[in-house]
Length: 229
Ligand SMILES: Nc1ncnc2c1ncn2[C@@H]1O[C@H](COP(=O)(O)OP(=O)(O)OP(=O)(O)O)[C@@H](O)[C@H]1O
Ligand SMILES: O=P(O)(O)OC[C@H]1O[C@H](OP(=O)(O)OP(=O)(O)O)[C@H](O)[C@@H]1O
Image (tube, rainbow, N blue to C red):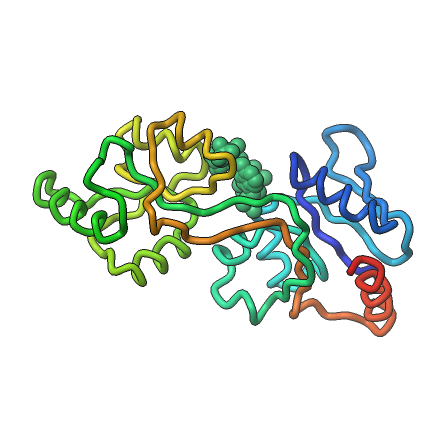
């Protein structure tokens, strides 16, 4: 029986996570061919590496199938309703920084705040006969944010990628997505509302509150976290 550590299976998050563990004397590596999602942990016994999509790590932690996992704050808050009852943040890793924001077309010169958006939403509905559409993959976070901001007259449109393109493609009027450098927003003629920051996110090491452990696994987990934190 081993402690299961979930890490994003590709891209920037995987590479930076490998570096972060490596700097603490724990080597994470992919094994097998380039395309095989198999991995190993060196430098400590009793820990196995599970490579999977960053978006699936919250669910696996909550289900207790992973003991530890690395993924963004945004994905944990979005995917887990009562996130603090199922997972515990152990360390912010200092990379994967991104802001979840609400943005509208730059051409909407009268819309700079949530209050303005609320007013624009009402006139949009009156003019078009349907609700202003906001494209996002962060349904829970956006709904909660708009509720607390007093905006109600909108419809969410699901967008799992290239979300900033939905406005030019006329499938949405506004978007809520992650931004880092701001390049993608600029290139798609969008601007962030002045009070449109929904969440600051970064890559974080999480511990499952739900994963069952044997006494030996408990000892291994303690040894691992002592070395990492
Ligand atoms: N441009 C960016 N800069 C920094 N971090 C980002 C950026 N885009 C996304 N992230 C972060 O990276 C993490 C993974 O996001 P991503 O959407 O790629 O995961 P995913 O849904 O698992 O993707 P996939 O299904 O393609 O594996 C999230 O926590 C997100 O905040
Ligand atoms: O502010 P920037 O530095 O331009 O980064 C923001 C972009 O990065 C992410 O997309 P990603 O490249 O992961 O592709 P996706 O559209 O498939 O999510 C995110 O969804 C934004 O589109």
